[in-house]
Image (cartoon, rainbow, N blue to C red):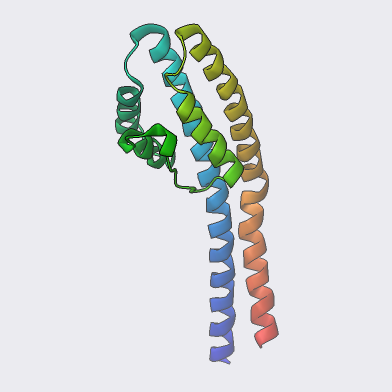
Length: 160
């Protein structure tokens, strides 16, 4: 009897942990795009007023913030040839990763007013992706944990 109870408890814990993993992935994705949005705000401010180099702005942002997006920023800063820039995928899909690469390649390639217009276009795009990801996190994050818990209970019952 104790063995059956222990197996059921282990199934519940395992199911809940799986739910937490899926929920955490949604949170990381929302945090990633929130960081992209904050970085673009920083770029707009810097391009408008200080006119520091892009790599210096990135280094300052990396030092001031701790996010998954910092991995991609570090890859850009350490890259010698921008045309061969390779970015780690992390929590984004291939299409979004390609778009972020295009965003990085476009930095510093045009005059100030054109660059600001491009940055505002990217900002609106990434702000919308962040809102969608955050909404999905709020909607499905708790559901994944509960679903994992109940699937653990079901598996425990089936194994009895």
